[in-house]
Length: 399
Image (spheres, rainbow, N blue to C red):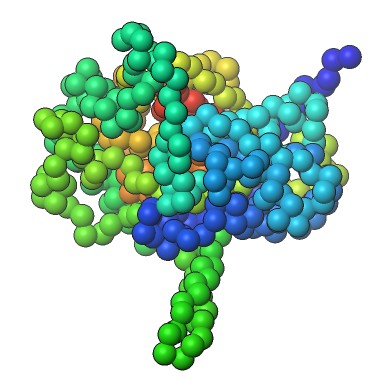
């Protein structure tokens, strides 16, 4: 029996602040605890919604092991105090995991399998390092040049994009500086207030002299990454981080980070049943593959596919969150797609704001959903490159 096709609406979208890894404010906070905080905060924004109506939670995580392993989605659902009837599944498409989680949740609604879904992402790069605790590539990757790039570090792929698309060091540093400047300006203007739920960090510090354990609490309300003190001269002094004669540096690359985000999506029937106000409609999603050695260019294939599925042109999209894995790949994508720089990352991107891998797609979805409403725009997009050579893109419409 065919199911009825219906729309999926975002009714809540929030996130934690993003901490700098591995020495930032959230370094000792477990990723499942970050996710619990995001889930609780999202549900608090829709108090009329009966939690027992939630059918499943789809959560993205790029390296689902150690503290963020053992199906972190289901564990967080239970730790957040949701009914045991609410399921949980962890999904992994590396950097687009959080966006994929939103798309999967939306699709469950759109095909009529669910009316209320949770989506989100979490990642602690302080606790679970890049490539995980036990990297174990298949040895056949190294049998020939065809698949060798699967094992490339992301910085090397950025160098190859910079070379092939002729993105200069100066252009990369200029882009990086603009990311910080936009992020600082947005923080000062209070533009992140709609999307960020402050997080209380509790630290237990031994007082050896008093033979006591002191409990210290502080509230983190802003992303830690943006730097008001950075400048072109400082960025120009940084050495290449991945290739001896390269142009990709720590300053024009995304920051390793900790954070989580959560969204609540519902059908039109659930909107009416629980008297909810929609923030945005989930319009379309697409994934496309590219050669692994130039993985950063992935959005140039995914964005047109998502636009076609939505029946839109690139000029119809008012706000584009293009994840800044590296300035080199972001600039190459912008050039190839002819994107308007003013519409791309108007509040800064991952170079300034951080990139907690599997959480970033959900975090940037919250940015777009609230940004569209705050500025009165209609369409917004989240897009990113993905390790092993992919791009993903999702489109939202303000309603």
